[in-house]
Length: 190
Image: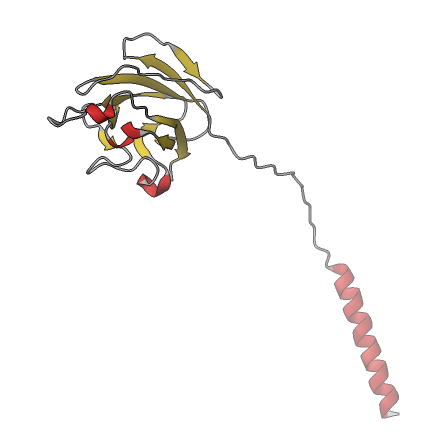
């Protein structure tokens, strides 16, 4: 009898709990939205002003431009200006990297890069120029730093090349060549 009473009380308790739980309903509502995240891109175009005359001679945008400097002698120098346009997303730190450097003049020419934010403060950059940053090894193998260009903005830098006169016999450098490929790359700033 005690067993039946216990079971009956248990069943009545469960029934009361079930009725009580049914009496307390929670209201809820929800909305769902699809999320799409797209990364941006880096995109530069370069206007070339040979000899910094103020005239755009060519635009490099996904193409290659060939520079030729001929009949140089010790004491000669040249300069070219480049306006880099940041057509992509985000600010970019600009570097120039030279590859395929070859020829007898490689160890004898001095290169500097000077951005318009710091005129006159160009850093030496070259393969074996004493005190110079390496063409390919500087800045974590990014090459020579040439400045920063903000998103949607442009910046100008000047590349100078000098064939220094060393007061020594440079006859062994007659009719010699320097060949290389120069690449300007913009890296997003951290």
